[in-house]
Image 1 (cartoon, rainbow, N blue to C red):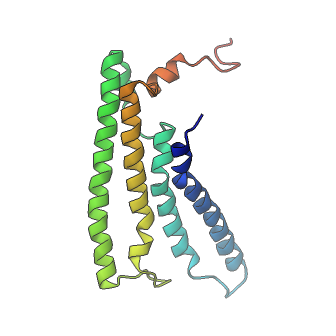
Image 2 (cartoon, rainbow, N blue to C red; image 1 turned 120 degrees about the horizontal axis):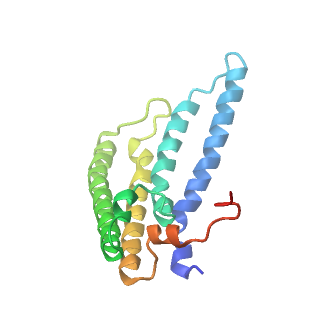
Length: 176
């Protein structure tokens, strides 16, 4: 059962779902506007690009929660269980550090955009606002990685590789 804090931090999952709906609407608008001659909506491509980037960055947190991000499980599988635990924790800390570095440089870039009023081509939106989902994705992803590393370390969360090999086979698997 999820705690109250875990329910609160589903913001990125909800926002990513909303972005996915917006992408569907954007693509539908683009297709229907191009079917009628001379009525193509010029901003749909630009909005689609922004929404796709936002979806990618807002999906970091949910990928961490479901252990869907990239790991070297083939290497980790060959290690003893105690070493696996430390490798998972170390991997999460390195990934979190990488996201913090990206966020640091991203803030500098966003301030440059804000100060120089750098805008997008079609909609003339300040790029500062377009990059906000990237920053949110980095912050939430870092938080989730560190929480997950702490839970791995304290034994409150089973290691993903141990879960995968201890789960019972699905119905129909292994039947010859």
